[in-house]
Image (cartoon, rainbow, N blue to C red; front, side, top):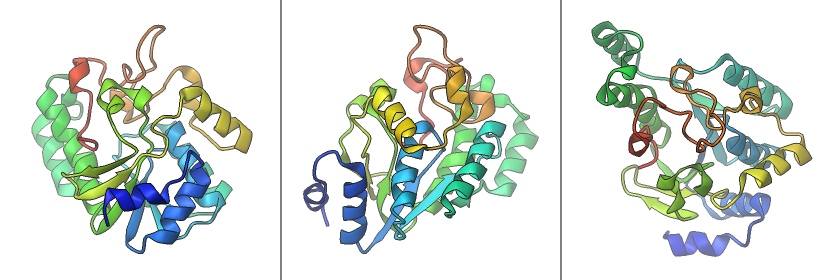
Length: 231
């Protein structure tokens, strides 16, 4: 299988049809990673409402998520009567990290922040993607300069998997319209100017005039604002 094969499966911008077509055409493992952001809820709705069984939905529970995120996770499970597999950080690695560095050392060092992200996100993601052929994401070009140059279908050399970014060219207005039209549950923090929601210590609401991801790791330079999940 190559990206040409995948591109031939995708036809236009119909999210539901494209997800169903990929699920029907690919026999290998397909996964979708959700952090319960508003984009991810769009894709979740499309998968769960169509009852697509051979796309495995998973999330990374870092242990530092907002209460509102856990509430949405629970509400999503109840609304769709579906399963979301959770992956957790390695206990011994977290214990050692906190013992050596304290509970919130990421505010003082980019390297310590990246180390925390690696333990809580990247290592569990490695396990989640094990054996997967296609990784579906909720990435959008509007989210950051780093993501503006992405393609809808990409080969991820680091994780050795094809990434499918079905919402890449959706606008924020289109995402919100889909959510409202289909009665999709979403994180209440979005109504409080939290546009990109991650771990609670590392996320704040954005201020007027700020960019989409300015609320993530706000104490760092813009160029450093990725956690290692998307190279």
